[in-house]
Length: 353
Image (cartoon, rainbow, N blue to C red; front, side, top):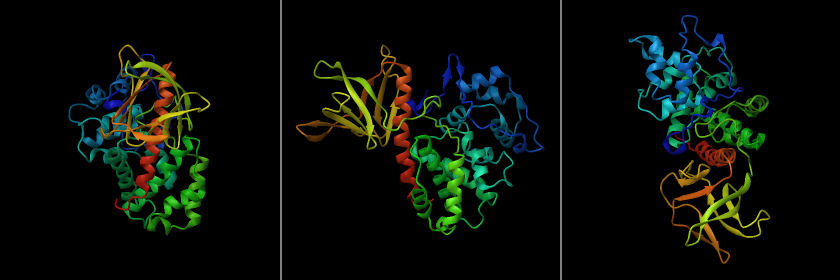
């Protein structure tokens, strides 16, 4: 794990974990002029566990004078995990700004329908959490499709907007809170050029994505622990002058983490709005199941309830203690996906791409 919990490399024992549901790269996507050079299983495992440290090793099979285009294709068609590639692209300084565009131009997709092309490109790299990096990711996908004349007539910015709407649909689908068709239409229609595609075309896109959502992964969560909308459970936190551990009942509701005295919500103690936050774990050496929710901007977050009044807190970090690693990962996934959804939905309404 690195970057304060924003980039994970999921493991199973001492091996990297890759979801069996991840889309497989079909041979027809590989250019006939490209000859794939295979890495050993040991090299792939080492890369998927430590992508930045093992980068030179995984591309060594290409020789000393490999071009950026060759490196891009090798990474795209290799067995490198989406999480490892996300960390390599977005959490290192190994590549020039134009390299991701070379990477996404690797597969042969020019004859595919728009949605099928998204199914090839979007899952290959785990989506990054940071707003500016995520927007760059969308722009790179958009540039790749725009260069290949997908949905001819749409400007580059409008194409990016439609890609973002498709990702938002699949993200909400994962949360088991699928967008209604009217909500999807509203998202798409907030861009005038996309709106001009017409209700029938956008509704058909919605139907395609609903029948086969994009299988996405996220740099900040383990795919074995899908998010739970309304996630709840008992956690411990430190309270009082002596900072003794105290159990509280915690639930995600109204896009916030709210904590109560008991599971019947007898008394609300406080809460943390899930926006611009980072989830880190573990945060104490002797408490392996500890986790921290902190402000991405180091500004104070959270509030307490005192005499029925909401009082803002002056701290930017909140630490909780779970009972198991599974619990930690479920909280990580559920909390971060709420925050990520809010970020994505806010970007949908920006007008300047």
